[in-house]
Amino acid sequence: MMAKNEKWKRALLWLPAKLYELAVRLRVVAYETDYLKAKRLDAFVISVGNLTLGGTGKTPIVNYIARYLKREDRAAAILTRGYGRASKGRRVLNWPDKKAAGEARKHPPEARYQEFGDEPLMLARALPDVPIVIDRNRYESGLFAQQEFHTEVMILDDGYQHLALERDLNILLLDATDPFGAFEMVPFGRLREPLYGLKRADVVIITRADKPFDQAQTVAIIKLFCGAQIPILYFYSTITTLRLLTTNEVYAASEFVGWNVVVMCGIGNPQAFSEDLLGVGINIAAEHFFQDHHPYTQADMDSAVQLTAELGADAIITTEKDATRLAGLLHGDIPIYAAQLEIASDDEVRFKSLLLRALLRKQK
Image (cartoon, rainbow, N blue to C red):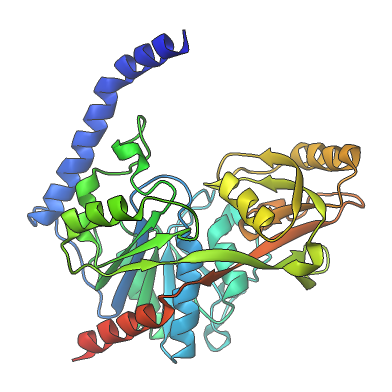
């Protein structure tokens, strides 16, 4: 019966799905043929994005790049649309003190996610010295960052499909466990655009590369679209510390080995988060999953707290992204920790060299 229902569902969705795919293809072709003109900033533009729906680790990679550029004394800013925010227009997080000249020009990381979006707030906490400009129009926000902050490097968070702005380095992320989204566009698969969108990539980073996957097939498909010389790098993340939300105290992940916890999160790939917790020796008593960017209510929190108490679990563990949406909710005596990830790779030196060489080519 389920198979029959799925066939009917697919038949009903086929026409709207194909019309959507056609619209996506036409948009890409319009930019490729210069029917639609992409705009260029004076600053060096790095785009970080993916081909599929769901979490592939974009925000941690953006964090990684911004942190590295800061260490290299490069004036960087992050441009993002602030997905899921209720506000309109431009918002800025981490406005440098010397530029702060009004009430709205300096926003702490504890600001409301409804105004800024959860991912920008998470980045603001992790990168207090890096301006984050939130605006649907990345070109206008880039001009703003150049004028206000003298930014020399713009990092586009989730920018792979934002074709209206030219970029100097197009970084594509693929999740090792599902790199090509079942080879179909939504709603039948997880692709945001047809697979030939791979060819726009200058660099491909395979995330969660510590998990089992068919490396030979993945590489073959990448090279089929991108050419044999495309740099392919392998990254993964590990949970290194956990932050207690009530005090902001940070503890090593090793201190939680053997703990029994309830996992509470609303992210693109919640199962991957659970696997990361298991990987550092934390036992999962229950999983309380929500849709990505879920706007938590007190009822959601009460349900998780009650479940934790009934199971006799030690704590609730969530993500830093979710922590921005849990702020202000009451949770009694049940401790809640946000797990903090650290990016790792055997290709780190190669990636940093690639970034610097691309920047130097732009300056010549």
